[in-house]
Image (cartoon, rainbow, N blue to C red; front, side, top):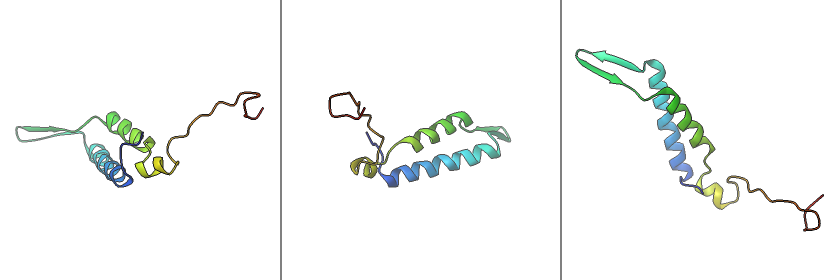
Length: 80
């Protein structure tokens, strides 16, 4: 089931890609007494991989989403 439109998926991938770029420049830093720690690099990568694997609503509606597996049984209309 598709949960994102193509536009939403593209926007999410852009946001997570930006997060990846920021983390690659430094995951943690301190300014004065304040400390900033960004998200975990492996979590960002997992999320990007997950987003990339998700079909967009438009693709799912046109039949271009995740493939369906159809069992082919001998004598039941399938190829042998």
